[in-house]
Image 1 (cartoon, rainbow, N blue to C red):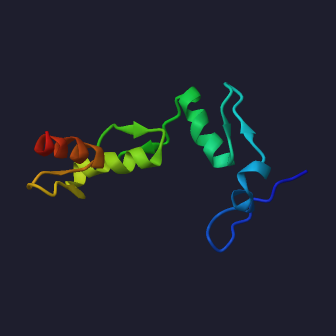
Image 2 (cartoon, rainbow, N blue to C red):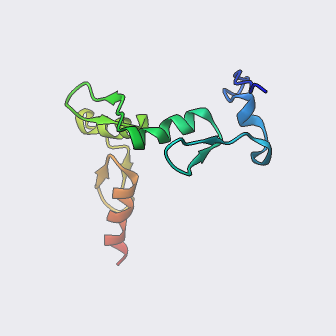
Length: 106
């Protein structure tokens, strides 16, 4: 049985459109992890292989996840999209702002 991975209008594969109960699980060859999508399994496998395909064009930083590279690039660009509603503090990371906000509340 083959699984169709054709993209639909929403950008999701037919497999991703199926209810979670009927989806085929993709099993990691290294551990007990299972993913609902081939891309989820591919991303997970990098934790075992050490592969870091996402490289910063400005320094030697490499990541196994594209999202982590996106966060890292903010260091070089100076982008600080998250800000404190109580003062002028800004950060590249929302969790840093949330931690900072507690200094106003405590």
